[in-house]
Amino acid sequence: MEINTSTIVSDIVKSNFKTAQLFEKNSINFCCGGGISIAEACKNANIDVNELLSEIEQVMLDSDPDARFVEGLALDELADYIVKRHHSYVRENIPFLQMKIQKLCDSHADDNPDLLEVQNLFNQIAGNLTSHMQKEEMVLFPLIRNLVKQKQAGTGTTQSGAIHGPISVMEREHEAENERFENIRALTADYTPPANSCNTYRVTFDTLEDFEQDFHRHIHLENNILFKKAMALDQELAN
Image (cartoon, rainbow, N blue to C red; front, side, top):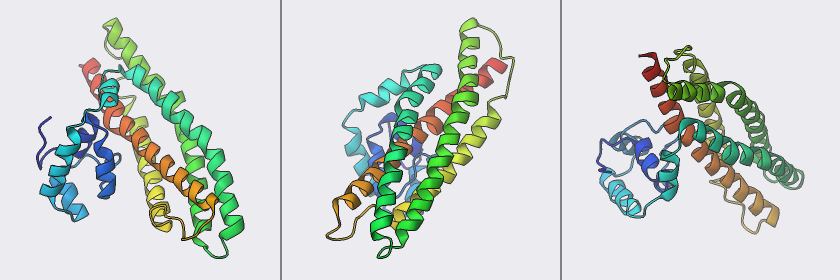
């Protein structure tokens, strides 16, 4: 893949997800706001575009078999992969994080009242993501699977444009939760526990950061790959 200042951020991450860490380090949003050029992203982040391009080229030297695997999945297979890999991760980790954050608040909120806002934000994320994933699994993903079946059957779509509304809703919800994660990161100084903090602090902040990183990959797979391909297939069948 040839990369220059005009290359779209999300396309780079789609080609090699190992570049995601580089974008995150430079405060460049690749999952919800990745549809911009490297030049624009660097301008927004106030960083040197040539330096970032050089770093991207170095990362791209290391191939990413996971990206090739995802790119090779059919749309229905990709939807299944997202549910099994990312939806299950969210559901499994929400109770653990809520418990750990509650313990932090019980023990340390007097000294660090920002923990209460972290708890409030994460509880919103937990509730919203749970509802969000249900809507995907019950409404949007079945629509996408139906498009694949119609493609395989060689017929035109009987529901042209039906996925547009649900996709728009999902993307808006992605953006809202991403903003909440940004607020949590600001409140926790990039998930940095206080000096000489207890093990609960470190485990909780580490797990929170892992949860956010999984969210970014999850949303990247949906916004930048699944949804775009589904829209393209819908248009193809309509024609």
